[in-house]
Amino acid sequence: MNKQIDVWDYAGHIMKNIGSGILLTTCKDGKVNSMTIGWGQLGVIWSKPVFTVLVRESRYTKSFLDETGVFTVNVPLGQVDKTILAVCGTKSGRDMDKLAQLGLNTVPGQKIPVPAIRELPLTLECRVIYRQEQDPSAIDKACFDRFYTMGTRNEGDYHTVYYGEIINAYIVEEANQ
Ligand SMILES: Cc1cc2nc3c(=O)[nH]c(=O)nc-3n(C[C@H](O)[C@H](O)[C@H](O)COP(=O)(O)O)c2cc1C
Image (cartoon, rainbow, N blue to C red; front, side, top):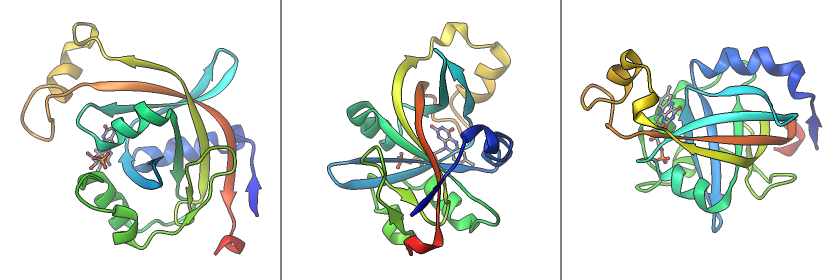
């Protein structure tokens, strides 16, 4: 059993955690992949609760998202092993099975065919209701120079913004072990 939650009761917790990294998980043809995200927004659009993620073109995750249109957001409660965020934030699912390598435990999704992750138990199940490719000419120059020019940690590719309607929110309980 998972514990159903009202996402707004955890809004502060979710947004405080995103700066240090949370996970975005997708699943296609039975293959599960998680990537670390440090950007995201929780809000209301079209009168729906929405979690917005920004995914660069180069991410393996993007192909999963474009094909399936569903994802989970996985947020730690309490301490999280930093290795999880480091590996999921630097290695690509193209090259390895990150979850298997890290020994992460998945729990089947409730309303979408994307699992939750026991080690990051606060889970948002999201369905993409809008996606928007960035218009480079509309990005503030300082942000553009910092995040979209080649060099440092930038790959020189742009983000697609995915608006995920939060259709379910819960905490994975220990009983799922
Ligand atoms: C703390 C942290 C935050 C990150 N945030 C994002 C993000 O919001 N969007 C993004 O596209 N990549 C972000 N990344 C980079 C991806 O997690 C990384 O490129 C990952 O290896 C992509 O995995 P994939 O190829 O399996 O999709 C972040 C990395 C770290 C370490």
